[in-house]
Length: 541
Image (cartoon, rainbow, N blue to C red; front, side, top):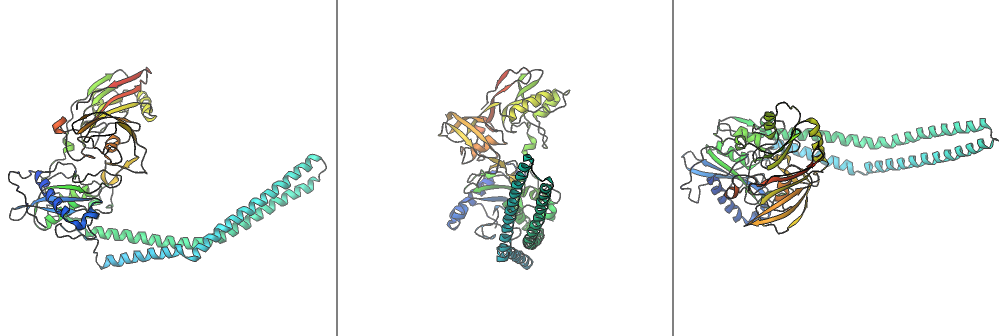
């Protein structure tokens, strides 16, 4: 599984620290290794159809016991129905080839599924359900007809009373008799329903008992499986997945934990005495439905499955610091200020609100500048990487009124962006509902079950192979403009410098290391003076 480089590595310095896998620029050796893996993948014609659908691969740069430089390769999940292929490191635990205990439990669970299916499809259960449905219709019809008859007799009694020639005693007795008959009919109907429902309830109870048994067995089997993933770290320590995830907010490992490329690579390296130097993961094939993945581009390890595992496995390695923790954004520029509000040009890299990373935020800047105000200040938000106009309130009343304008969409906003493609359509509307990609926070994804997200756009001009675009978001979803730009059902053109939905290529040659997205114009009604305000701020890219 240890591969020597076929291309020369002369002149490439070894990495000083191991890659921080959740936000990184691939080391030149990682890129070189990835290129060799890509060539190998392309040579496997028997995998073309499967890999065209998309899969994540990874490389790990290592030194062997003799100090020789090489690399390991891995894929996430399984490939061609197997976890074992000679070019790639094996699975930490092969879930496709479990031992006798797991086979027995899987057989029992399959048997329970079969019993549930047989009961649900049985002639007796179907007959009981049909009988219950028929009894319900009969009862409803009988009661409705009787109520109609009673209503007619009541109307006749009222007419007789109005004529002045009625026998009031006889009419009262008739009314009482109708009521008594109706109550008796209701009791009879209830009994019929209970009898018909009893047969159905017996089947449902049996099915529910089987489902509970299935759930209990499945949970126990899943826990037992996760215990088979005995992960190692550079300190020589070992811990299974249930122990690794126990202190996290998830507590229980998600499905597929331990099967991604990065944990496989480190596990193999530790077992075979190889020294990890750097790593990278890249995508091959089409983008998954709803997500943004670009063929041949590099991506960080996922947060939900891999972060707890890799955090443990990297213990003992000299790891690069998280670059997001080291961002020092410049001071914001004040665009407008009065006694009620302040509007700034938030620089790229500054958070809108306080976060766990400790990176300076506009909220923190406001608190330092206006310590006398203790209420909420941030009226709306911009992504950390997005620069431009941000409004902050100096009183709770102003905050409430301004926020209401954003909520009811009376505020008009426009952004300017530089896209890494030549867009042919000069203008249009993108309407793609969005939701959080829970496995890859803070990434968002397109989903029919997501919230409405609508963006209008117009092309401003072309700059070589790039397109300058103006966006008019009609909704304010997290990462809306970034995802609508990059997704193949949107503009299919990532914003330059986008390290989440982009291709991994930075914008250094053009504007430095930043996301080329800027909130350039904002129109709103002043909460106190009621004057219509227009704030503009030119982008620096």
